[in-house]
Length: 134
Length: 425
Image 1 (cartoon, each protein chain N blue to C red):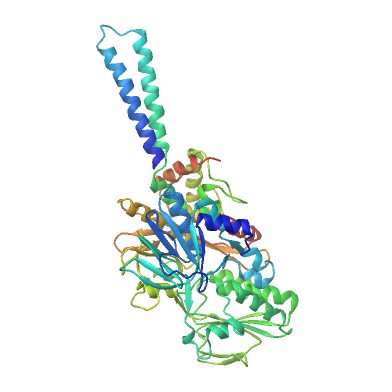
Image 2 (cartoon, each protein chain N blue to C red):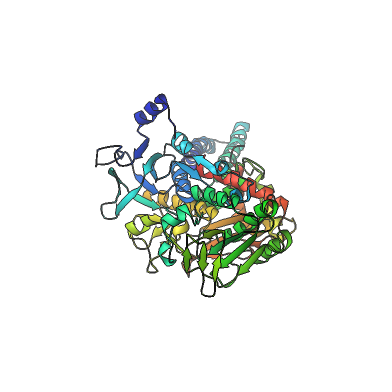
């Protein structure tokens, strides 16, 4: 996954940069307002980059969703009739799959497919579909 | 395939579409110069074409893919029974391979494989060869004509069509129905499981009845089934025959056709000789001929055993088999072939990059049967890898429709459109 790798490189570079900044600050006599701002940036940067790394779906997520394409199109880009799954919000995807599985949401076909997968696999599939561009 | 001069120049300049028929080229060397790690795929049906697209897409175009296909057009077998019913034409189900070439840079060789050398890792065609790092065999099924006395490939093509590969025979069978007298008998023979598309023969009985009901209402549809009972969607098909075509469809169990008389249109089972007007004999099937050439057919002399994590043959290294030819408790369907193709594609990319295949594959199958011009029902299942049995096992929760409906008939159309796009565009 080239994209994940790129994010990782970026993340490493950023951590080193912020780490160095922090290191310099720690060497200082007292915490200044400036260091607090840097700390905030650091945490924010870390969170954003981590999210980016984890959001890039792995091969497992991709493989699990591949069978969906017969009805929902390549990478969830349905060309007619069935819901477009590409770009679907993760939470919404998981809730709906769980509802199909439990029978809370009636369906013609999806209840039968949903029962074949675990809740963890719904999360994996959701990760893949949520990052596909609409 | 019609190409104008400019298109032809463009294609030959890029060296991406090759006609590999005898007389077209004199060289007996490598047909297409190998520039990178290469996968050769034999067979451009649902399985083969999907494997080609997904290997390119998922490897970020790093792996070279050559797709060898003997036909110039892709004709969908799924939904082709509706051509017999009259709600679709064969043209509606026909696509080309152009986008696989133009969008994914898949090298498409239009020709027929004559031999495979697993040691040298080459595939022979009439006018040259293709070397491969990995080979994917996706030939679909071949028919065992010799299992039915009086039947041959020639007789199937001309008078007793099987029409179990969509195309010329589908059109022939439709024409035979059109010229049949009102009050005539159409008979369809169902081979013993396993065969391509388990619900297909029963769907066909519905589609023929749908046509006859409106055009030749005194006619009959006779199902001669080699199996002890309807093998797929039994309750739903029985209900469709009873509700939609009352008195028209007759079902005979344990009625394997052993012999045919092509001139007299007579089918012979262990119990009876049946003289009919239109005879549709679907012979028993086995893996396509290329599987035999590659030495990947199992001890049953019919199907190909594979490792379900990669679809690599258990008999030959670096040769993968997908689709109908695979020996498995998986339905031989178009959707299943595409699902297998994707697991195979992912595994090939991993293996070529020094990695390991996904250890826990799960794949799905949805199969609609059209029972009239507008109504359908389905069977849907997820299949998961069982580590103990080293086999794909049906996960709990799968099943069939509660009843046939127009909603499902519409969904079936969406399915067709989406899967054809997924395979070819």
